[in-house]
Image 1 (cartoon, helix red, strand yellow):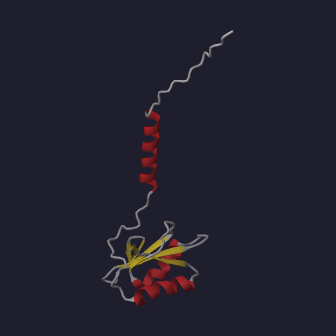
Image 2: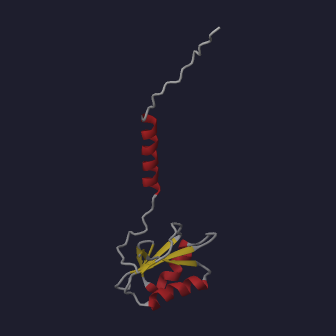
Image 3: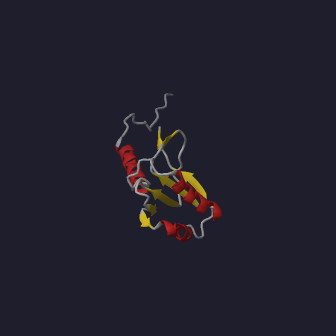
Length: 128
């Protein structure tokens, strides 16, 4: 007695569901991507790995203007603004973005503030 299977699997594959998933992923990554390079700074080059986790960004441009999260701040009030921005954070982190020709004493000033307040400092650089 010869038995025939009633359910046959169709070898056709529909790409429409795959393209839907790709478009949804594309939209998700476009919406969740942050752009830490809002200020146009020429960062020094270095080899290394950067992280995308940041709490506060401190930028120093060639005219020695200070920016905390892209808002211009007087250099005398940086510590006050950082304390306000990092209040209540578990692991407060500062991304320090000093332009290439900025004197090291300006970057050390921000690092000193971070050291006094037990903040972690990450120096941003552009890839080699």
